[in-house]
Image (cartoon, rainbow, N blue to C red; front, side, top):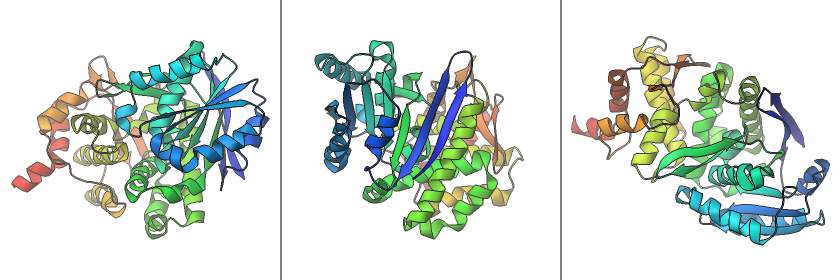
Amino acid sequence: MKSLMVKGSDLELSFSYEIVWENGFFALAEQIKKLQLPAGKVCIVTDSTVAELYLTEVKEMIEKLNVQVTSFVFPAGEASKTLHTVQKLYTHLIEEHFDRKDVLVALGGGVVGDLTGYAAATYLRGIDFIQVPTTLLAQVDSSIGGKTGVDFDCYKNMVGAFHHPKLVYMNLHTLETLTDEQFACGMGEVLKSGLIRDAKFYEWTINHMAEIQERIYPVLVKMIQKCCDIKRQVVEEDPNEKGIRAILNLGHTVGHAVEKLKNFELLHGQCVALGTVAAAYLSFKRGYLTNEEFYEIRDMNVGFDLPIFVDGLESESVLEATKSDKKMEHGKIKFVLLRSIGHAFVDHTVTDEELLEAIEFINGDRIDGE
């Protein structure tokens, strides 16, 4: 077993929790017991896909703690990441008499973790929860850092709260059951991690493309642990995203706009990958990236089975959708650019004309029409 501590504090928030990497669920009960939580009841929140694979096993593990274990299962997919699903979860917790000392366990990918975390942040003004991420995207990014939330009227993550888990427990063998598409989505966040903070890790990821695509276990372990450490560093520096933490949003402004306009038909990681290409294009046009660096970033999407173009959207519509992004500040987009590979920064001066040009670059319909 290997682990990593995440801890930090400011005037509004204090947190400390462990990220544990294992090759099974066998140590989950022991790790929860170490927390010495006063819970008498635990609710495992998961989706219909993950429930079939892991719910029974995880439930049996937690029952070893001599607590009452219930489960709440909702239909898999982004369409369930809504206040309506949270309301159903609240009802389940009320009917099962959950109190402030009880615990939620998020078993699944990013949708499950975000939704469960938000429910934990708001039920009875806040109860404890534990992240058990089962997708690559959740393991390298969304399960760490305390951001929770749900979508509202197709606007991505517009309702949310900062609420850190008490534990992040990763069974890395769950990656064996991911579809190729889901695995690729996680790689979008892996590439982002290197681009924003660690050029050597970005180069390492490219050099190990074959082993990663073949899901060679020791290589995946090293990759996931490095991503977690990068995220930990940024979160500890800026817990509430008042400054540097915003670099974690590389690719997300355009990505969220595409995700909304495609009615969530594209997965989050695919949209972030498209947004990263747009951000890299802007960085190239401003002279921060060389021609070679820009096209390497774009082409790595292809190498990891991620898109570089999107079809069926008007560029102007994508631009307009970015203005509804939650990262707007005083009417200006906080846009993440790359000063170089491994060095991201937040820029408030990106114009509509610049952004539209970048969106045009990833517009597959424009390419087809030329």
